[in-house]
Length: 198
Length: 198
DNA sequence: CGGGATGTTGACCGCGCGGTCCAAAACTCG
DNA sequence: CGAGTTTTGGACCGCGCGGTCAACATCCCG
Image 1 (cartoon, rainbow over the protein chains, first blue to last red):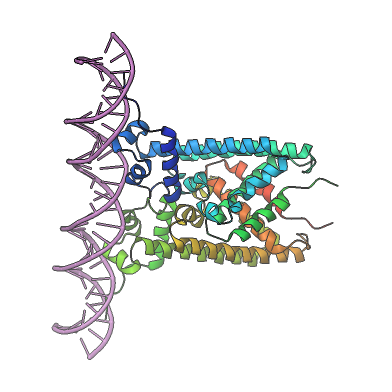
Image 2: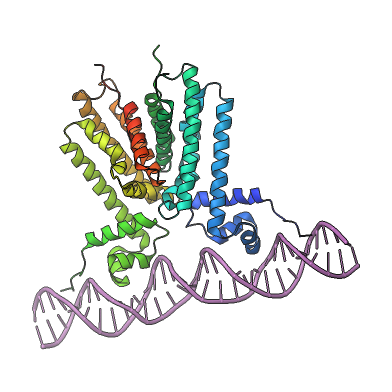
């Protein structure tokens, strides 16, 4: 019976995500979102609700995609420890520095909004807990593979690794040069991953 | 000759700082700033220029105060390593969690603004470099005092410690409970500060 | 092919934004 | 005390914000 949608929701979510990622929540106007999505006001409001609801939808999908990506990288990594290293280096691996300057949408949003938006704060907690679980799994595998001291508490190391990664992401946003950022990641990892007794 | 100011610039800067810290840059209106400062529009604009200039002034004074504080803590710490530990635990040391949720004005501002405001990005780099230097000094002292492996590269450890601290601050903003946050700090420090051979 | 339901477009709304400006006030000094 | 200078408070401005809505287009199905 109804008239069908003329746009693909996922395309819109991705375009809108990039806008929020680039400008932040408050500095992105609905007009910006209409521009990047190519939709009219009625369509965008009809499909996603107001600005905040749209943002929360975008944030959640961003996080889910991120978690899926991490699980895939763990699944396809030759060794558990490789995935952990990749995770921390990530933003520093783009030699142009663009990825580092962009940072992470969740981290940016939490810094901007978490104080006054409980939904954003809750989403951040959910996401970081899930990441910690994945890292723990990766580290347990690394212990079995002989790359990490089997006596270490994998969950504890995972939390420290997460903190280090968040630090690298935060530093990346300052525009610090990529080589230096890579050094930070390398230096943190060298100390956070206790090597097994030889 | 002239009519004297009726307000104290430093008081105003502090009040305005708290407003920006609480709401973020974009979400804080000039009316908010007039309210918290108690000034009229003419006075605020006359003394500090527009919103962005006022913000940059506030941010720089915040950073300077922060650096002064760190240097003082290093000067008065019984041991170099104590200052490093305090630095990382800091926001988690408020048992109410308020400090953790508030986070750091510089970190929040960098996450919100660094992409499009080169002055904010530059200020962040300046500040983080200065912090790294102070941490390096603290760690060198810790090495002399036998609390940190003297073979470690103090500057490298300092960068890793900074990353960990930024991670703790980022996690703190999610509203994660303080005990867990303290554990993250503890766990990171335990691994980042290589103990000297006994 | 027509009726009903949904999607689309863009005009429109009121508000609050950042910023300007000026008349009155408050001071110093000759 | 009066002249000169700066500060003060708030009226005022135009704009762009987020959000609503109604007229029209497009489709499915009987």
